Image (cartoon, rainbow over all chains, first blue to last red; front, side):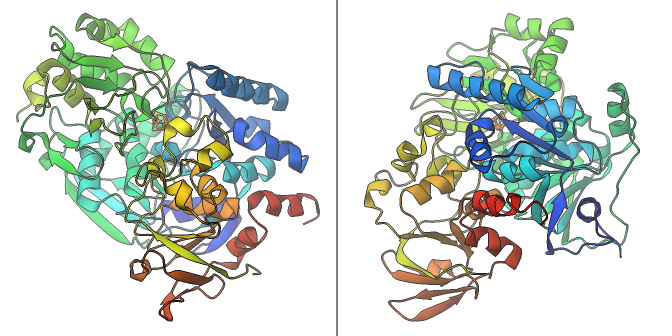
Length: 422
Length: 168
Ligand code: SF4
């Protein structure tokens, strides 16, 4: 029977020849991830009540990112518990203040093509960029996984997205995925897997592709996947890991829908405050003024995001009355940005550099918003109060658009700064 | 499946109720009893004080969208909510409900239920009855594999039973 990537991965993990959409079954998990907020602080007491340890310490990734750096004693204690857990259970892939979990999973290639990966965070789907089935779950789900190595699943239907042509200069993966979410709505792919294909996807870097899989959470999808191709193979080769292209969906596999987009027609867009599916072209927006521009999160503060912002900011200054803050998604991203002048360009333009971590994105770390503030951010969610006061307003856009707003003092088409054609 | 029928007063909400409004991020640093005092603060401040034990939340489409925070269903449960009926659920929220032992009931006609009506839920059969009017609404029956976890009172109890029998 022809199968999609998702079916193939689940079939292997469940030890079945074939699986059909809507089958409910138990499957073996290849790799699991928890972070400081959803991990040890929530599951350690349960492990003690159950009197069990972890299934395989080498297949668990543990990351401190949400509460890094601690800005109060309660947060410091959450980090301490996480650290103690790593030691107590011999977790080798433990990273504190090295970067945001989803960014590290991709950078370090912890989830491999064809694997079943579960993480206790809704943006676990990011790693689908590596051709694995990456499923976000909650804490007690991950408790089941780390104690038994197994989980229950409903086999999903898959929607194939085909983006033809090429994205134009000044238009990014962030604009593309926001466009798709705006078109289909925040529950447009509920329970389904989104598989990204087409020439515009092929042409994107791994980091840009990961913005697409990251924001599958914002369209209700179970996850997103980009099939492992030559670029993915190269990414793993740079890490000293040998992988083959694939798995691929069979040509005659059953997709619940095929969504077709023209890469060439995508414009710089933003999502308007409170709803990430209220997406409009910047050219139709009327240039609302902003007081804050934020470049951060697993979605929008990888090295290439910082480089895009620097492209706009080089030789320019952040406008009076705007605070531009940059929280790199990983230390590796910051290091690369420091070594090639990207960080210098950001600082010269007047950016305020924040610590690596989730920062203000979940409304926990540094850089949160006051009532009445209007911000534009490279993050992925703008639910009311997400980044601070319930009375703040948050637009979501690409790193180009955020940097352009910082320079102009209002939300403007970024293509005027990067030589693109509006 | 041995989940017993649930019946309670409906408390209605709209579409896309997200976990940031169910339990705002700033409360996540606190323990469950404190979190329970603030559930739904993002859409209906003071809601936690209005809940009577056993009330049923009735929502629209995509209930529980957003972050994977399990404190969202746990907070509602600790505040006294007995079940959540919605037109559809965000998938992680749905799983989290099962795992904490709070029944998620997918019912396409959930919008027919009005605030304050009494609803009774038969999970195994996939049925929601509006007791006030006698109207019976179809709901999605839970697959047995999942119903077992809910019937055990959540994943931890389910695991406790299984881990105690290493041969299973
Ligand atoms: S950066 Fe934001 S979206 Fe990404 S893991 Fe952290 S809190 Fe979640």
